[in-house]
Structure formats: C-alpha cells, structure tokens
Length: 118
Image (cartoon, rainbow, N blue to C red):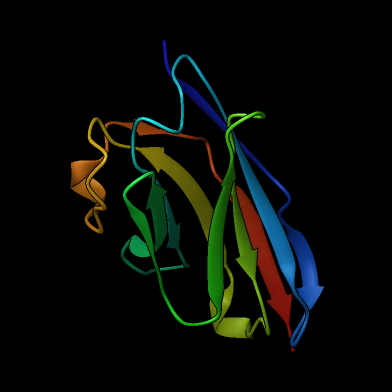
C-alpha cells in the first residue's frame, strides 16, 4: 500500500523560505512521478511541482528534488508571500511522465499547512 506523509509546514514571515518533505512508502519514488499541489482558502487545488527520473517541472519560486535513498521528495519554497498560504499536498502517479493535473495522480498525502504572514 502506497503511503505519502508530508512534513515541514508551519507559520513563516513573508520573504522566508521553507522546505517541505514527502516521505513515501509502498513503492519507490524513482519509478513514478511525485507531485506537489496546494489548495488555498476558497481556491481550487493547483499544481506546484513534479519530479520523476524523466525530469521535473516547477512553478515560479519553487524547486523540487528527491532523495532516492530516503525515498523522499522535497519542495523548496523561496521568497514566500501571503498568497502562498495553503495546504500543500504530496501526490504520486502511476507513471513516470511529468503530470500537472491533480486528477492524474492516484495517491495523496494528508497535507501540511503553510501560513505566510505579512
């Protein structure tokens, strides 16, 4: 059974950086695309970044990386703004193709809250 556990969220000031972690179990992150999405208050869930052995895709001030030995994917968020406030979710697909649509992902973590104060 695939499980994804996010950590690293919290309350930060505008301009700060934060690194979120997604620890996977049940299968290797090196074989399938792992993505990060976020959902702010009253907003749709939106794509932030994704990575697989085929490559990666990221938006704006975010960077994604993975540690195969730890079976963990990281999301580095830089120069955070109040509008970055959201629950950040880790998700995994059943392909190594880089995907940016939430419906394409099969497994989801419980999310971690990031709050950016001005």
